Length: 107
Image 1 (spheres, rainbow, N blue to C red):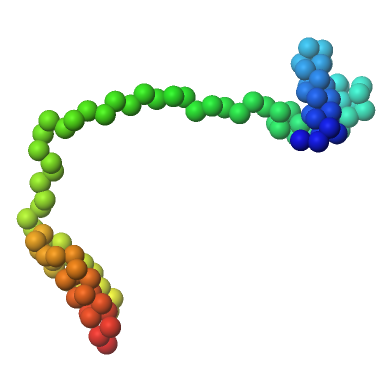
Image 2 (image 1 turned 90 degrees about the vertical axis):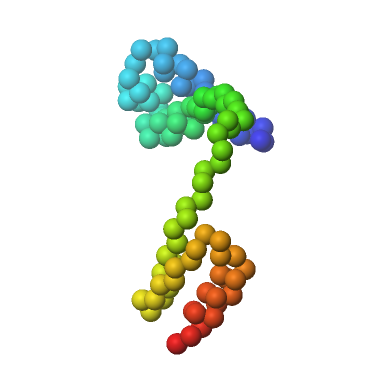
């Protein structure tokens, strides 16, 4: 950050701190210091410290149960032109991809 920007940030930090300590409203403080109220609010917002997200500890534990069973019922895939396809759980992904390409190309 350039020297001028650092000085501007320091100036506004000082003004915001001064206003808080003065007990005056922002409107009165700005009038007395020849500042634009909207500009004061912009700097106050800009200089507000970023809120850090709270830390959440996560513990990874080995699963004691067996994996989720694969359903034995077929899966319905809806295609264009109102067609659908029922695919069993043992159907190979490569076969399904080739079949879908052929079905989508048909008119």
